[in-house]
Image (cartoon, rainbow, N blue to C red; front, side, top):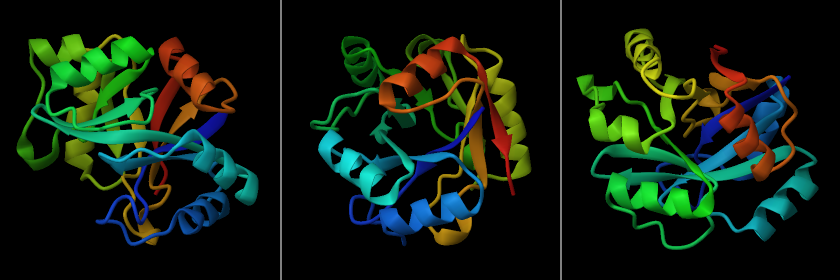
Length: 197
């Protein structure tokens, strides 16, 4: 089993965050989480930077991106670093298809907006079923939405502050070692979103 917080924001790439990557990593380790995924807003980490961070901290650090699109915020796994100006869900889906990546609709029940329609189901593998920054009712609604997709929903803290790290995560049945094994594990459907705090 591997428990990973699949939704974390850090400085300087996410200006809305109050944490440096090393602080988020230290907190995740202290809270018993096996790894974190840095999902900055519309900004990518390079593979070399992530590898250096893993080596320096001796912790499982993964990277994805949270895209701002016309269909809401999208957690994109497996996209290569590059311009993240994928303003439409359709463009993000096309980029993910080319790269062998997956898209999950982030916090789909936030603000009372259930952003799911026929296109959403076509473009996204699933939704973020448990978001550590959302209310219990929002997470219940998101978990219900996840049942309409081909893969289970994921979990992540959506951490921007130290107190938020590890509130929610995804528990995988298989070991995760890098971004490719994360994609493989997501495609397998052998995981569940969990609330930790």
